Image (cartoon, rainbow, N blue to C red; front, side, top):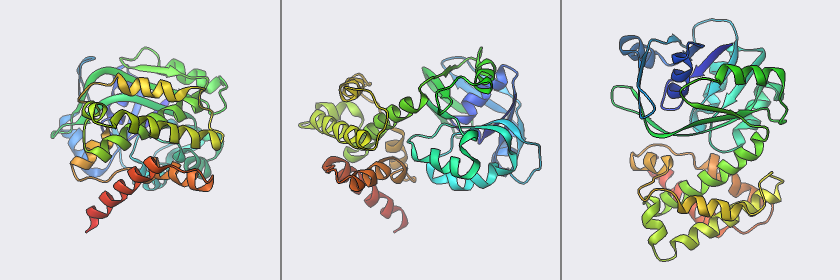
Length: 306
């Protein structure tokens, strides 16, 4: 299968690199500056799961080429609209678009543009970043990518994709219930990013602070209530599962949104907290903790343009 990785950043660069390491047919769609950097230095992955130096195939959006069998999208949500135009020339009749964005609202956006049959579900769990030289640095044993048909069916093309993904030095797992898994991750990441950006702290001191654990618990309950109200397929007792998961996180664990905020970068407030806040308003559900978190993020975003 011909695989197109949109970008060669911390996520796309890692998973695309692992597939390329396995000698799959992988091409990276990158901007001109990143293309020059990779042509000069190659794609280097520094990882606790094994280092690798690669010379990937590279294209920019202005280059004409045939369609791809799979397009993996791992951009930030606020860049997605631009990505839609960039990948359009590479989407064929049977192309599978695999998004790895946090949240859930991007699925409808992709489906509206390319059709429901073209979009499959996906998510990932990984701690990775780019260093100053543009190398991918991956520092945790966890490097999991989960994918599956939105319908839950094991179609012929999904099973073919599973074969292509197998045998890599990363964990690629086919899910028969990817929609539920995406909502569960949405619940987790919205909670973690919300409390860490609100309190400007890693999760450990938040858990120890007066009212910290209670704030986390209230937020999880608010989010789960809204999700159930709109028919999201989340598990019974997911609130306790998420609370337990937050309690087992490392003391110095920070969300990627918090790290972006510390760097003065744009954040995915509307895509994560804002989307579910608007669902709560539509359903007339009170969400005071979520509202406080979302307000905090919007104040931060305003400071970026002042």
